Image (tube, rainbow over all chains, first blue to last red; front, side):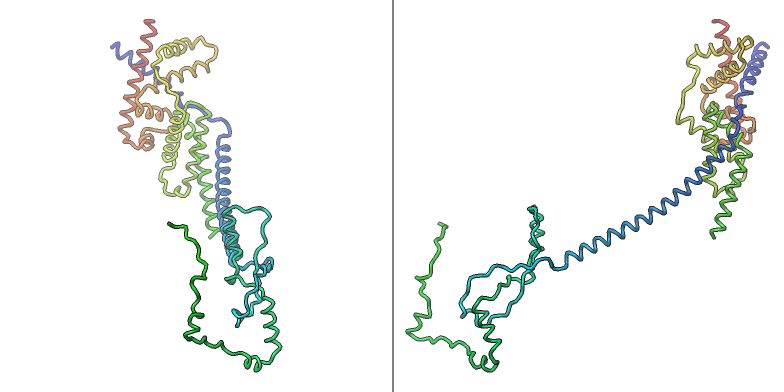
Length: 196
Length: 187
């Protein structure tokens, strides 16, 4: 009986405690604040989407610019250099016999101007590639004899030039000439070998 | 097409607004029953409706908006409590006795609001000492807007389980209260 009374008393205490446990009222204007917060988040999401869209376009434009830059740089690399025309130094005159049918070479070498700063090793390599002449071996200017021959050929009728031209006679191979035809090996300077 | 989607968005916005107008107080009280703080409860209510707004495309699938919203509010508040949990228990028996003593002297206290606050603090400590499933069921039962069937739907358990849990929770609370009262008498 006493236990029942005690239990009943405890129930009453507990009910009084639980009655107002969650009866709190929200502060005035909570609904409005919630709606404002929802609108803000909606606008944020909308602007975020637009920004995503914008970034997509920006990325596409940037990619196009990079592609164009790469293509332009490749095109410049393929084109021959057209900066300065430099004539190479005149070589030593050679015998006219060795130039019986000289080719008319009026070509020039075009190389890029040197940079003021001393390039580093990799830059040197790139520079060497850029300065490589279009024709190899490097053409040389005409010698005086070649110029005379060229003026002669230009000023003389073709028939006369053809009549004057004749092939070299083949060397006569005889007993006496054989020794002259074969060079004396003893006269050929030989280099001393360092190998032992 | 654009006009159609704009109209759909407007209709969805109106539905969320209607939910706010009809159930914001219930959402707040569910959050308050768990968080025990006005500011945190309002934050949780705000977050709850934000979650609803994010699921606005599926609003037409909701059969019972009240319990659906109550469940979102409950999970939101639980998440918030887990994030910044302050453990409350009756292990500190001395502080519990002090609270009970101040509760019994409440009739002479000038500030009744302070006494009510101390009562709530005592009950909060007692509930925090319960097993989690019992404590959560009891907390939801204190929300006036929810009956046992709705609590069952919110917690996704049978209604009979809700009643069993409430009975066990009340029994344990009474035992703890009795211990506190006995301790006060002998102390």
